[in-house]
Image 1 (cartoon, rainbow, N blue to C red):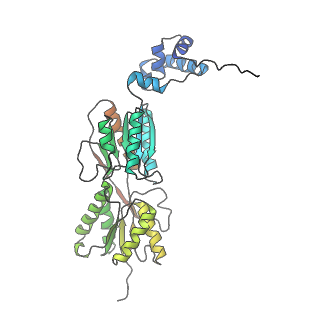
Image 2: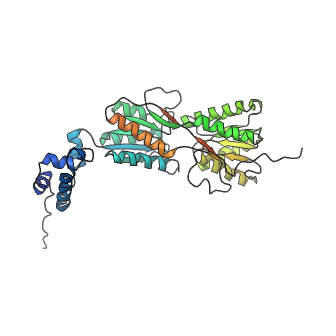
Image 3: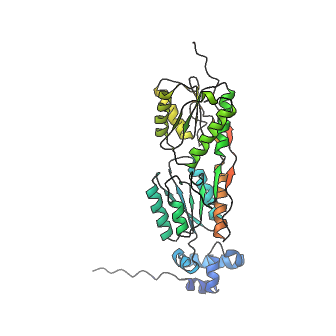
Length: 350
């Protein structure tokens, strides 16, 4: 019967220390991105080379047990297929990585129960904090983070309507962005402007609806407000369904949507109904997701600061991880980008 040699024992931190001619504590500092600055570059290089020769890899679990820190941060998004989130998450990951943290990404698919499970699992695995992009009415994620004494930051979301608490957040100026979209449509001569809103219970939908109404009032169109329909989700399919409802509800020459995916769904519904954009109905979006300048027609939309939003969320998290009080709620400016999906209303014979 063939026998194989037993696997050699895994190298230890003591082995690396002997090979590099330093104390074991120096090895720990040299291999910890957050502590490496405390020793000279020459010593850090010597330790790294010795570790590489021996095939030594520090145990994150052991380090976490010693320090009470896992140096991991969870980032929870409601829909990983939504193009708005990858650039935000990438900026978060880049900022946290520079500070020596690893990002763990989780997708809830809009399910509040799954969201709660993810938070529980992150807490059980010793995550140092959670950045939430999924908070909505009915969510228990923030309360769970608080009960587990985990720092929490909201990004592209603030606390759901009606909820109070000292939770730092980074959002776009959603109300102002939607108001600007309505002002643009009114400036083109549209008097009957509808709103295809986001799902009820999300702060983004609430703020953008508020901006829509403010824009209608500022344009002096309060008496001729168009139909308002809120989609069940921020998705293309939900946008198509909501746009079909708008078409059944009443006539309008323009629709300001609360999200670019919703706008794409509106395109689908209008094409199916034999209507054109912007010939029959002008459409505006929100977020300026990738490729919105490549659709036909290119989408007029409100551009948010994706990278800055992620960077600021990471900074707020690092602030709490450093033992400082929760930071402020930040609202970043949004910018209207005019493209080919909006035009003056076409004159119709009466």
